[in-house]
Length: 140
Image (cartoon, rainbow, N blue to C red; front, top):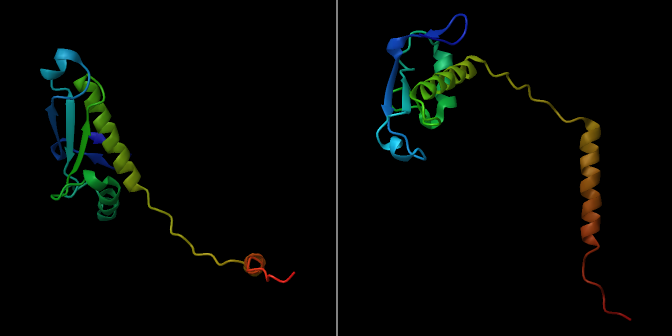
């Protein structure tokens, strides 16, 4: 069981792990030891997550969200299977914690009268500078 916070925990049946061979440096050992982990969390079917959290999780997961509603996390950072497994579980927990936080509603603000005036004065001054860039009469 993976504990997210005091109230939410992910059950073992919701998680599946698959181990594959990892690329990168490691000599001959890399070809025979499956150290990379692919953690799959069945988020859509999870009874522990409220609907709003699932929606936010889907947006936060991005490409890691599959068509059948699962979150896939692949880790092949270290040469140790156990450590990669821990990292994958930590990342999943962080992702779910981020989805638990409700975003603050943005309150639209209006510009002050003085800031509007300053903006228009700046535009006017800039226009005058550009107006002076015209062609010069050839009298002389």
